[in-house]
Image (cartoon, rainbow, N blue to C red; front, top):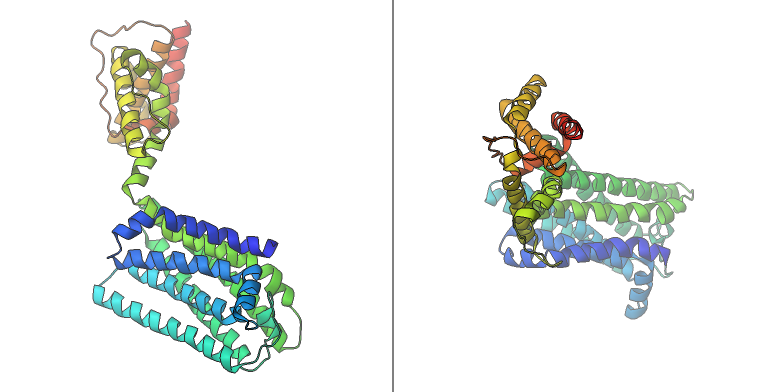
Length: 388
């Protein structure tokens, strides 16, 4: 059962991802990229479920053919390798005609290998059921040996192309495209795990050809590597699609505004009555609500904004080598932090002509509010003044 869980868990994760992305995939079904994503997730989850020993035993029993699962699993695994390459081709873009020809060539090559695997199994002889070590047990059996070599060669080519292309893309990708770079890094890591799986499989097979027994590599080391590889690669393809979506961008902005919202919500509540949110409220509504609370908090604290604090913080930020735009945001965050301290300590507004804070975007203001040493110094100075 442990062998089954090692493969069932990533298979279930891929299915959950497929279900979560189903609305997006359905809306974009006319796009080749979306169809490629769907194919990858479906085939990837099939590989995980079909390759588990309990499933292998059940399929063999239901079909009445000993080792029927062998060409089935090897063929689906070959299709998975091809779908990875197709998705990279669609993802990378380029002239549509060139991408289309490369896609059809990939489908034809890997589809042909899958068909060859079935043919080799039919003309070969594998009378003893093997649930975990078929590739090493039949390593020297005519035709079955060639079937095993075909699937390993196709898998090696697909995994090498996938890892190489994504690694090259990762090195040249713009650092501002964080979801894309994260996805590529996951795919490269998964590809390296998959190459490790292939090295182990080839080593165990080669040992059989030379009269040695390294079957433990194939039966105990290879399955966890395959499981991790499938999970990383599947997740890597999904992250850029999710990360580039409006919902993800809203969630990312919502999360980055948390420090500012946490500091200002008490002040906003004293001047305006905020509308409570239900736990099922969409992230877009939550973002609007959080931005409103922050704006209301800034408005409530405006009488405590000290122009002198801003001047001091701005000069300190410029002295640290920050550009003018970022130094201005740091200075505004310092004014806001000092006002929070003063208002919380019960100090009355002392500035008849206070500074008008208007930093945008709020995410930049929130980042400096939380992490800038200049802002931390202004906060400490305001707290000390309040105590004295």
